[in-house]
Image 1: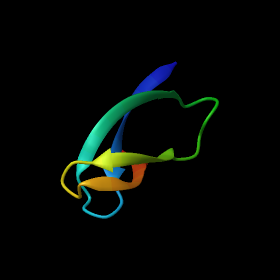
Image 2 (image 1 turned 90 degrees about the vertical axis):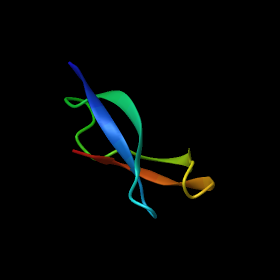
Image 3 (image 1 turned 120 degrees about the vertical axis):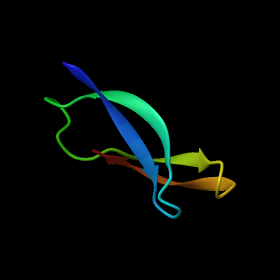
Length: 49
């Protein structure tokens, strides 16, 4: 079952993106580089609850 997760910027801590993932297959936290509008550059975004 796919669940909705929220991605948070690692530098300014803003929650910018939402996406889905399969929690049965991927139990660790997702981390990707995405553009943060408040930082105005690409930063690491990490999954939060």
